[in-house]
Image (cartoon, rainbow, N blue to C red; front, side, top):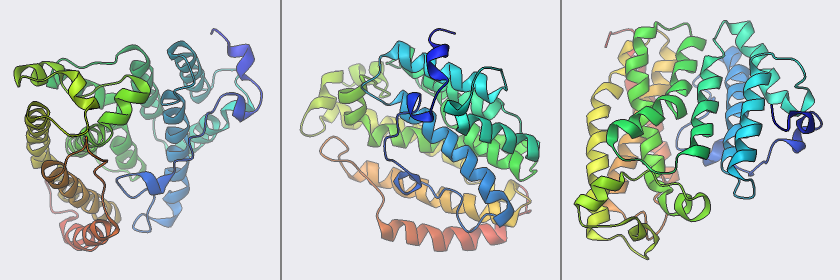
Length: 294
């Protein structure tokens, strides 16, 4: 692998920490709702995902350098030799997955998505965007289901929820993603059909065409939420059902906020009150949903 010999030292020779953490996410990470014994494994997965995401989003690195570092992380995750302390988060996740019998493919799929970010900057259809989310978002939910020993028939519902969370995050960050990384997840032909152009994202406020495109993408999210809402019922674990029900409530709130607010004028984000309301309502509904069957 190109440059691998230069990536074998300290972690800071490979990682590019952004300073972001669990508090910056749209969803709870390893919350108290999850079994205490599983929280370290969730933390290992999150630390790995955070490290590779920071590499992919570092504007100081070229796309080629990002891809090299990401592929080296994948090699370390798979246990290939010659990848040492610089890849401690990959090693930690591999050991965690080995201990819990969770396949490493979930980590490798995330890496594949971030490598794709280095190579593909525009999306031409809804299906194309969903294909990206299969790698960039869905592995998170699949990891959690596998970690809890859930039936993989639940993947369908967790995939829907994770995809919605990914797309609303793209809409939240569309301006910064375009400015800092030249990445645009807004579906370009839909924007053109509405009479707009990608330059609309750079404006001080959303154009009517961009608003129409955002709403069309949110309509797609609403369709996915039909399956996403079934996730808590598909789960045997009451704690995971409660956690997933909270996240469903947060996703619903984000969709509403993005319909009502302008993500070009300023980042649309959840408030502490939103988190509190979702936490209470979701925990209660998830408690009673567990094991009922999707």
